[in-house]
Length: 251
Image 1: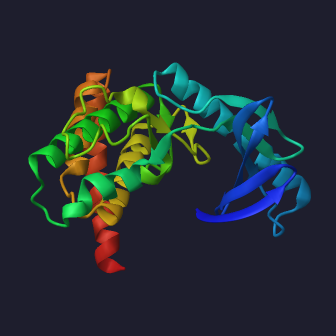
Image 2: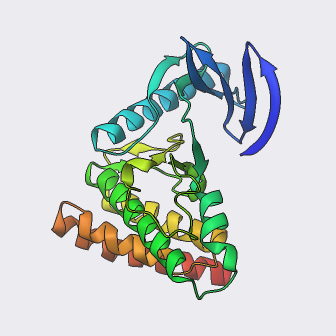
């Protein structure tokens, strides 16, 4: 999403993507994000309204299912179908995981990380592997697993590569956001594709830490509840990865 600033109905526009606008404001006395899915003019109005309503329902359902699975997500306050939007909790004292990694892990610009950076990398990988395993174990597909869709909250200068102190950083500090492409009741291939999307996004955004995905994948396999299905996912992931590499070679 690209950031911008505009004000409408007491909510300030803070970001806009291909599918939605995100506003920040106050709702019922609480700091709130309002995610608005705008109209697609190329679609028939009735079809557009129905698809938008379905996507809003699916997003809310996925957020609630993820929370029930033990994954930290924003609280949903209201789904307004006429306004085409979701009101949800604004996470205070949080930073995008992408920015945190760039500042605290990737800043050396080399493949050889300091001990403190390696420790932090392990903390992040363990948390993400655990979170994704929890989602997939409950058949929840995020659809856009990137470090831009994960927040790290309540982490400050006390948790820096200079101090190497991450003992109190747990999976609860990682907040998964933007379930706009999420779905439930997924297949083994859906889960494999979800993992491949993450791998590709990490190789693009965090090429300085090439071991991050493999560490996440290791934890994922340890934490996945159904061992037999996990083996199927690993096999399918390798097939998806192979297909993806062939497409990249062919162009």
